[in-house]
Image 1 (cartoon, helix red, strand yellow):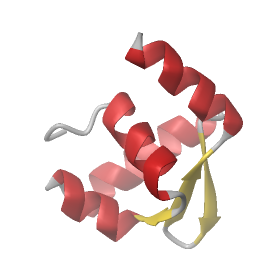
Image 2 (image 1 turned 30 degrees about the vertical axis):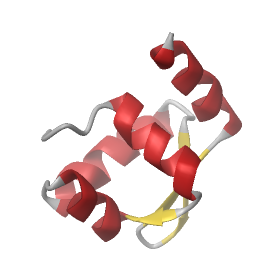
Image 3 (image 1 turned 45 degrees about the vertical axis):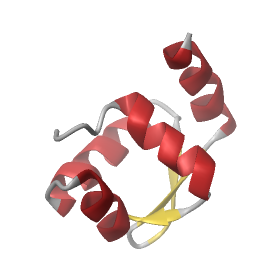
Image 4 (image 1 turned 180 degrees about the vertical axis):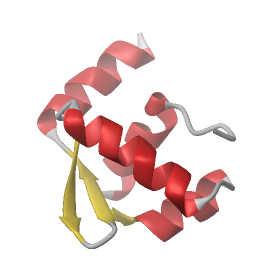
Length: 71
C-alpha cells in the first residue's frame, strides 16, 4: 500500500475519529478496496470497528496496538 501501514492508518483514525473509507483511500493515494481490505483485517484483530457503510473508527485495543507500533 502506498504508505498506508497499520501505524499510519491507525494514527489517522486516532487523530480524526471516524473516517469514511473513500477519504482514507484519497489520503493514502490508494484504491478504496485496498483500504477496505486493510480495515477488514484490522477489524478482525479488534483494532478498528465499522461504524456504518464505509466508515471506520479505532477501538481502544487499536489505540493500545498503535502505541506499541510507535515505540
